[in-house]
Each structure stands twice: as structure tokens, then as C-alpha cells.
Length: 359
Image 1 (tube, rainbow, N blue to C red):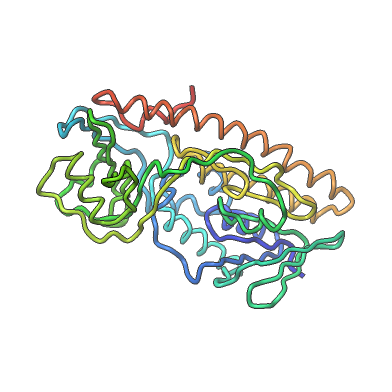
Image 2: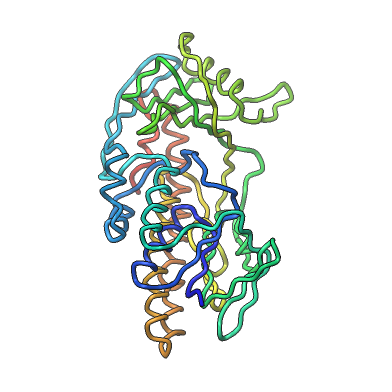
């Protein structure tokens, strides 16, 4: 029988799978997507995540692909104002690259992600968990870990409230684009006295930039959905570099301010991990990294429970006791960081570095 069934193959689920497989646990990883994505998404690994990756044997591969240290080039009303170099010991690389490295490691451990596998029902008793899949099949496991993101199906099936708030209008549009002619030596950050801005961060190992921008407004004051055409208009207004034409938008997304924490991170033999358990502002780049730390903690918990069934209940309670206070703290901390960044970029020469340090 499968020891641990993992829903979701993002960095959180893959970290958990690798950590458990290294300890000899039988794991399965289900992913509802049909195939791996190639989206930059969470692009920064902090030192705490690299420590976890050292134990998994993938830290050197991450460092080989990613960049350590980045220079923020900040502009105001189209003029270059200041450069700030940031090197906190972390690594910059696309989320898809992190996932690929973890998938390769997991395959070395004899486990492959099962795509097109969507959980639609969960039942459990004292002996284990049964997950019903969309294709009509059923998977039985000792434990279930929901690592399936902020819109977690697992959380919904378990009936766990996701407490907090979500703003109705998008605060940011995002994408992966090429920008031929723009220097790849800097994370470019343009802001204006009129408000709004656009950021282009070069993604290592690619010819693309991750784009982040305040949404464009339409004639009725609503927000224009993300598109290459809209990105170009925002860029022209904020950057004022007529020679640069954005191209090949391969990822388009909108981001809303979500501040939510699951009422509990454990329901019997099922657990919530990463964004399935907590979502918060992006300032500081703590989201993916907190999920990786959750996964490392749950791996220790489940390995201990599998190794000593007589102490199972006491051991399993430890995960939520450790990680729920962390989640609550991160949510409050990132809200403060986000407010600092929003305030800082109104001043020429200030940028996202305002949210990198806890205050």
C-alpha cells in the first residue's frame, strides 16, 4: 500500500515526495495538469529552502542553473535613478526549473508524477485514506498531503475553512515575455509619479523576463486582462523606451491580494501543505519558500509516524503545532512588507528591496 499520497506536483509536493522517498516511504504524486508547465511563477529560493534542498541532494543543481545576487535597476518617470545589488544567499530561477530539478531527483528515487490525475473524493478511517479520482479509480494510502495550491481541491474535500480575505480586483498582472534589446544584467523596475509601474526580471537559463505590473485600466475604470498588447502599453507608459518591443508572452496571469490561513492543517490522516494551507502577499518572496519548509516538516512528521505507529497520534499533532503559528506569522509579516513596498516605490530610487527584510 502507498504510505503517502501527495496531491500536487509544485515545489511543495515534490519536496515532500523527495524527502519521504529518501526515508524509504512509498509515495505517489498526483497532478491534475496534463503535463509540466514552463512558467516562472515563484522565482526566488531563500537560504532556508536551499538548506532543505541540500538534504535532498539538489542544491548544487539549483545553483548551477540559477543566479546568486541580483541588481535592481530603478527608474522613475522613465529616468534611471539608482542600482541596488541584493544578495541574501538565495538563488533566482524559474519555478518550472525548480520543479524540473525536483522531478528528476524524484525519478532517481523511483517515483514519477502521475499527470491528468484529479482527486474528486476523500474518505478516511483509522486504517488509512481513500481518494477517488476523476477517472473513476481509487487510491488507498496511509496518509494524504494536499499540496495543491491556493485553490486546493483537497482542502475543499476535507471541509477545512480558508479564513481571511481576498480583494476583488487584481493588484498585479504577470507574464513571461522576451524583451529583445533590454539588458539582462538587471532586474528593471520602472515607477511613475502618476502611480503604477512595471518590472522585468531576467530569468536565468532562458531569454525571457518575468513581467510584473500594475493592471491597465479600461475606459470604464475596470482592469484590462493580461495580454501582450496590454503589457506593451503599460511598458510604453512607464518605461518610455520606444525601441523595446515585448514579444512571446508564454504565461499570462493576474494576482489578487489574498490573506488567508486554513483553520487547521490536519484532518485525521490528511494534511494541508504550502499554499493549500496559507496564502499571502508576495512581498519578500516567502510563499513558495514557506511551502518548502512546510514540506520538510511534514516529511519528518510522517516518517516518524510510519516508523513508530504506537506514537502516531502524538507525532502527527506536531506538524500543525509547529507550522500553523509559522503560517499566521508569515501572513501578517508579508502584509506589512507589501504595504512598505507600495509606499516605497512612490519615492524615486526605491524599489522592491523595501520588502526584503522583516521589520
